[in-house]
Length: 292
Image (cartoon, rainbow, N blue to C red; front, side):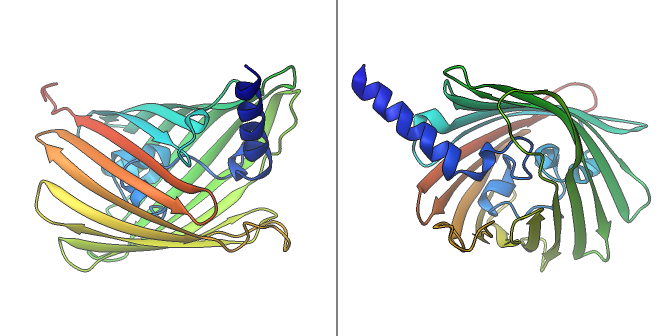
């Protein structure tokens, strides 16, 4: 029991001081699907898992789709995360919902998001997500809850070039503020360039308020209609010049496999200080008649 208490205490310290996601409603989010293997550089990438990223990318979705996500940070069980998401196209646009949970008894964060994305023209897609977010600290440290939103757009410059932008948490309304936390707005801007039907590359910059900007990018290559591989990098900014994690490089790797209407995205990332973070996203697309 004493050893378990020591381990949990050390993990609590790690979360509270080193992992930037501990700030309530901070711009850093769980990124799912291909985004994980692209080091999060998917602000201009359309697809179902845009529900957890730039929601404007959902506007291109043709059929109802559902998915689940499981991830683990740095090989630490207590820092595991899970999510479930659904999206349904309609004449008014694509509506969706997302629920995610990460953490353990001493610290955990939950998010419930409602999404609407639609095509504004043949070249412009837009999306909005409303979020309820909560962070809980165990051992009587309390809980904080807030409502916020994110908005994004994707512009098709040509058949090969897409530009994307997303504003995250520009404003938050606290429902409860027992555990502290800070609502941190974040701006993302980036591009996707398709060199061919098999290869596309991404490049993105993200600037949370009060932090230095981070630069990230990636490349995805389709081996066939059933499989693809990807790689990504991220150079993270920091709030303080003396931060020991300032300027670290995170590398990401991933692959996608398809079986009919089922898709599995397998990703992992490597943090120079904290180590490996594997994850898997599974999605299932239904046709208009509700069949797999």
